[in-house]
Amino acid sequence: MTRPTPKAVYRRLADRNTVRVAVTGLRRCGKTVFTTSFVHNLMSAGQWPDLLPFLKVAARGDLIAAEAFPLPGMPAFPFDDSLAAITGARHDWPAATDQLCGLRLAVRYRSRRPLARLRGTRVLNIDLIDYPGEWLLDLPLLAKEFAAWSAETLALTASGPRTAFFAEWRAFLDGLDPAAPSDAGVMKRAATLYAAALRKAGAPEAGLTLNQPARILRPGTLAPDDALLALSPLRVSTEAPAPGSLFAAMAARYDAYRERVVAPFYRDHFCYFDAQIVLVDLLGALKAGQAAFDDMRAAIAAILQSFDYSRSGVRAWLDGALTERVLFAATKADHVSSNQHPNLRRLLEEVVAREANRIRFRGVETRAVALSSVRCTDDVLGEVQGQTLSMVRGLPAGRSSETALFPGEIPAHFPGPQDWREGRFRFLDFQPAHVSGARGLPHIGLDEAMQELVGTRLR
Ligand SMILES: Nc1nc2c(ncn2[C@@H]2O[C@H](COP(=O)(O)OP(=O)(O)OP(=O)(O)O)[C@@H](O)[C@H]2O)c(=O)[nH]1
Ligand SMILES: [Mg+2]
Image (cartoon, rainbow, N blue to C red; front, side, top):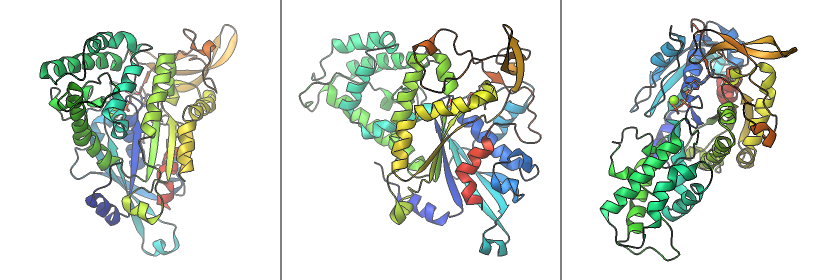
């Protein structure tokens, strides 16, 4: 695994009043909305502590104020624009993130620690970064050589909904000898076909998430035609690739991509953090159907294996690997009524069970919660075919008036064949209709998430 730079270690030693919170999750899972609500609610809780009853420092009246600052050397997280989108007259959401950005939230509070009380108030810096969710899918590539990645991708694209998207690319590979001398034209054609297929798989209507390499879909600061992105897996032969072969040339390009794009992203942002929240849009995956749900599970498992939770002790602290807790959160819980939240949490626990077990084995605490960073609906009771049911009422996306609906029940366990029936999950996306932002943002469970992530540092 990539090691932290001396600069990173120095920064960690110098910044003992800083916690790095890794906000992780696949695309559209709610990272930007979470970050916006996290910041705005902490900025508001000094005045209105009732906003965050489960955040102990706020509940005991010791949170004084919070202010956001830029993180040196990084584009600023568009906090004002995101908040304006959520609280504005258009009842809209922030745009999808297309580049790396971040902020430091400085929280001033009264400490209850015996010695700290004498020194008056203290400040804890909470560093948060945001990035396109697709990029996380690059992290598993760090531990995978070109041959292994090629073999896995060929297997992945040979079944399920990917078969149709990748058919033309696979047919092209069938006529290709990877041991032939490398040829720029052939490599370009393979890369073009692979990129086109990947775009189809990554389109929102396909709902597939395990799409690698990520920068083909979200180049960020790379030009879309950057030579580093002209990548394609190739068929793997049992013999070692000869120098100068097509296979060797593509493998070299893959290594350059990992070294120049993926490794710095990992080293600078995920090599060390104190706490991690893994946001999972379970409701979106259930609605998108079994193939999308299974793909999301595979993508989450692949990502979580990329983080290094294994080191401990003083040396680990110096290396910056003192992750204390990992919180799994099923986002957009306001799409269903409150009586469904226990099942939502239980289902999440099952979905991440193996990864959570692996993380706990390394001495890191884990928990799962149902979360809505910005609550857009109310619970109401309604009649459906003579039955009284719990429903949600809000402004569905694309509609001009509010509606109440029964979105279906969340299974407490892995969905079985009967659950994948057409129309079983009727969750709608809701817009933030009555959210003014004047006194924080309404939420479900955000304060519990905050307590879990940074609460012990605000004592
Ligand atoms: N109702 C509701 N919708 C939410 C909430 N959080 C996120 N959403 C929805 O999910 C969408 C994606 O949220 P983002 O925060 O932009 O997701 P992201 O993880 O930053 O996505 P990328 O930038 O593409 O990686 C939003 O546009 C909303 O439609 C929430 O708390 N409640
Ligand atoms: Mg985003």
